[in-house]
Image (cartoon, rainbow, N blue to C red; front, side, top):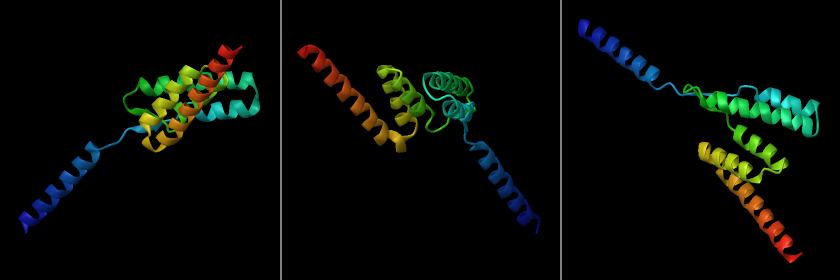
Length: 130
């Protein structure tokens, strides 16, 4: 009887230790929701600049804490804002990070990067033709 109780208690203790040892890092959203709201309230460059500031702050806060991971879509959203501001190389960097951190997003991020590179190539060819 005692050995059965001890076995059960040992099993439960092992299970609890296993579960607590496998705690996953939580996604960090920071001011992501506020950045979306800012863009809706202040359409145009002003709202986008404010949103970009909030997004980079969220990314930096998440990266400074080992308990957090940047939430899915944040790098992609920040990359999109950079693209709209004309910062194509930085946008590509953010799209690459999104695809690396979230493999399910990689096909879309690769498509975005390819389109940006094609557009840059066409613009360069147009400038040479002039």
